[in-house]
Image (cartoon, rainbow, N blue to C red):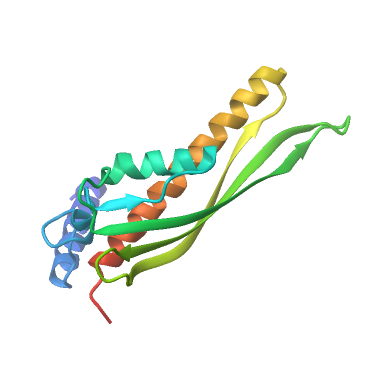
Amino acid sequence: MSSFNRRQFCALGLGFLAMGCGFTPVYGPGGGGAALIDAVAVDAPKTRQDYLFVRTMEERLGRGSNPRYGLSYKIDFGEEAVAISSSNVTTRYNVIGRVTYALRDLQTGEVAASGKTQSFTSYSASGSTVATQAAQDDAGERLMIILADDVTTRLGAALTAPAS
């Protein structure tokens, strides 16, 4: 048996092992992710970062025409210089974002899931002013997509997890 076939066999075996342990796909029947589709009303955005975050959440989960849940969030957003040239000019920045979120059941008011997540992305500031501004905007957009994807994943997992 070649190593490639051995890897496939091991992956298949791990898949069956996971199913035997009560593994439920997040977006499969009975998964928490399926319960979120078109069921979440995200708080209205107030800043550009909020808008990008909400837009991505709605792309992933839908707009929630008759929502069961409400999602509140708070975004902390900042930059730090990470590369400085020999002439003391910053040439690269990290864009850092943190999201604190709470998913509440709109009928009962109870918090169904909550948490915090953070990530970062970078951009180069070594081009023209226009190029640097475009890179900065793009980095901020990428970061909000990363954070929204992480929140979506965490919400699906939280609703899938059996109650303790």
